[in-house]
Image (cartoon, rainbow, N blue to C red; front, side, top):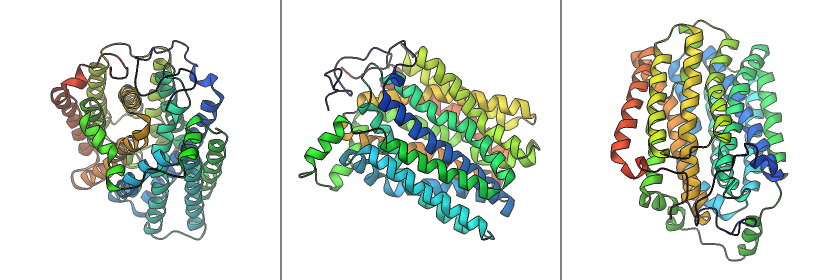
Length: 430
């Protein structure tokens, strides 16, 4: 696809020059609507997941069940990723965003009704989470791929930083709001999530038609046939690009081993001895650090040694995970989580910018589906890993050992992927 304002393809050609205006992407009204749509949906997810975590732990007192909450969110992405990526390349990305957010709203409504009628088993909640996860599986590749269709190449790094911040702001406000709303009543938390999901769907529709929508409509009479070869194009592209392969697998294993979010209810209740509001602060802390770093990156983009910077900050993420795992002081735990969020944001920023710039638009949805499958594995499957390890060896060792392994992954990947280590500037390949 040719960018209407630059006359060049977002995924190739001359290297983009990062803009110094930290609000450059927000001067585009379509990007503003897109950002708000992602924020509303992400905010709703944080409220719902926080409420579910408390409700399940109150009901069963089982860290294994907390891990299953993460697994239920990941399995749909694993089962559907070939189709979700193809859908993002085949149909309107903004309409997929809107429909997915609306379906997540249905899931929040189902949780509300289950709670009203009295919950005696976690199984119905797990079933609803699978449905929400399926909708989220379609939302992710479409939303990740759409941003490139809304901004110029020069604005892309700025847009990626702010795009990540929509989720990070949600992770700051959402868990605190979720904890407070759940403290009032679980029904209040789920009702709020429902309203926000609907708002996200409406805002996605307000983005308006893009040039790519017109191309999709024009090709609608003779779309690319859906075959195993076409849906697997994302895998083939990643396999042939060592820089992209190294970036997505680094995130997969680093966060898979270093994830601790699923265990925060257990930390809040049994290790740090804080209540619902304390859990909200713990869940918000990584978002605070990430948002602060995203704001810094919007005005001070990484201009050199991008690969080395990414590996170094992944190692720091693992180190701060160890600090959090061993801490028994709430203030130190919150600080460590904030630093985990800040260091992880660097990795997200470098990885996402490289993926968008190195990927042609015709396979961007499928590549993003694979990327988000890995992100989902690192997060939701990582939560399952943490829950299982905590069940067998205890909460504190599960987190501390995972952080140490993450540091090892950063060093190993720097050795295995020298092409990624040698990347200096966030630019499309020549």
